[in-house]
Length: 188
Image (tube, rainbow, N blue to C red; front, side, top):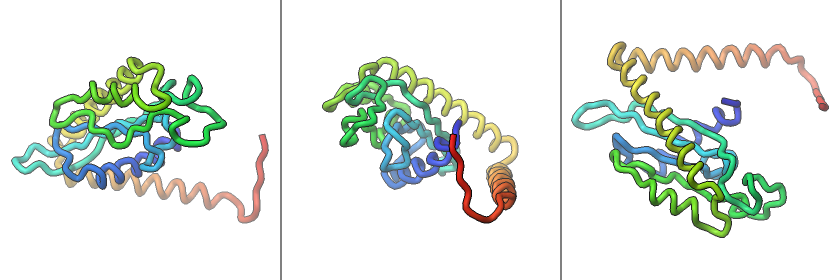
């Protein structure tokens, strides 16, 4: 992934938590909303909450994947018109759409959404195939996280995740400290 995708992923998840506080095991969400953590409409994010298997399931993690879709509607093929005057001209807006609710798919409703609006997607079948691939990638992540928790326990897995984040922060801070103070310019 490129940094723009990874950097905004947490904002997508935070907004999803606000928009769908009733999420449950088996749910999957789709969004491309630039006002809710997305970048631009062709970048479609699929988010899957990961719950433990207890009688009262507890949310432990999220898996998320973001993919650039070649076509999401808009005034021009390719969905990246430089002269857009509003968001609708860029394509179909998907705002934290619940694609799967407790393992029941709403793919037909997503198909309708992608086919709607003043400038619908020209490649709905490809959109759905790409989203299904993202759902499968997330599900692989769900299974692997559950295996890690099963083997090592939630406290240890969370601890290692925090360690990785702290180590990445330390490396980034060290790299930034190597940049001399002052004003810098670059041209290509």
